Length: 205
Image 1 (cartoon, helix red, strand yellow):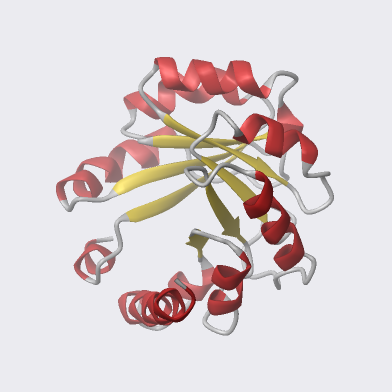
Image 2 (cartoon, one colour):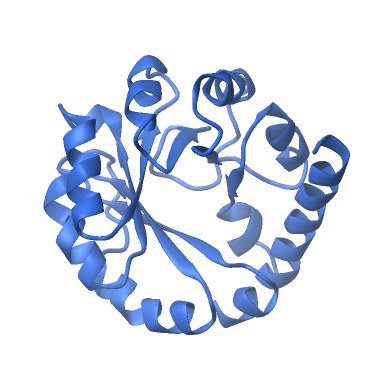
């Protein structure tokens, strides 16, 4: 984490899987608490992606452990707006996520009162999957339908060969796990991805 902070990374995407909404059980509040102080000291923030069946029940733990924002799945809740409000009451920024097979309408509606909408480029749970080609069109539709102050994030299969195209489709935030952490030097891998993205921003605005 220190190497990535030194390389310029400031947003760290922290996956939480409960073994129910997704099959995998991943890092939880104890791990979050162990790293949040160092990340905040380095000027970073922790964006917690809740791949869980009952996201509202995890909000206080995430906030207490040092999370700065949460992103929950529209498939996991009956009332996304209520979950957004509950997160904001705790001082958290908030996003809504949707899986590749989920229609965009629900996320677009909930996204009007969120900070970001996360478009999954893979089925959530396992790192290293290839980005689904339909993701580009889904990102473009989300960007066109959402207010400009709401960011469009993409997670899954993001790497150096597609970050520019994802940005051009309308993604503001690009999440890369295997594209950074599976490399020999994660800091260099991050810097290379960032350079490609910045070049795309200069070209495309």
